[in-house]
Image (tube, rainbow, N blue to C red):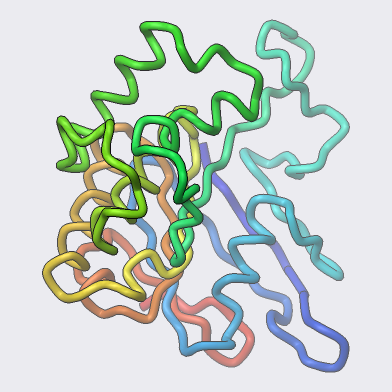
Length: 225
């Protein structure tokens, strides 16, 4: 699977963000997009998952537009293309403070009206907590967690739906150096061991040092670093 942007233009009113930009992203790879605040990193993530629309140009997955009429949610339909799934990780975690860790991780399944209480879902939740170093913490309230622990819960929540593409927006922006290294290593593990496409928008060089590939926003373009 490959995600591409082709000849993409995007901006806000009279402020251009991207001008005829090209780039591609592959599965099994941790991609880092760097740039100063306001350079368009967050906008890029929105363009990639379709929550923002370019003024011109295309966002393609395996050559098909992400909003193509050929897309279907039914993978059994052999005549249509099954759209890969996206999940997002946010800098401010976006956890529900009055829920415990387990309920926060399982929340996306509830939203999608899947059975979050069944044994398979709970086993997957426990496995994810173990992967992010929070085994045995499922009954704790997220309001009592540290920033690094909260971000790890947010990563587990993003993975509970088994997404094909994981987008992370400044996931270490509020963390100290030790937690930054930990989160960066977890994201690399997700890319390599789950063969997921992981795209991280950051200004943190520690995260970039863990990446397989680094792109920089420069002069309204994405430039290979």
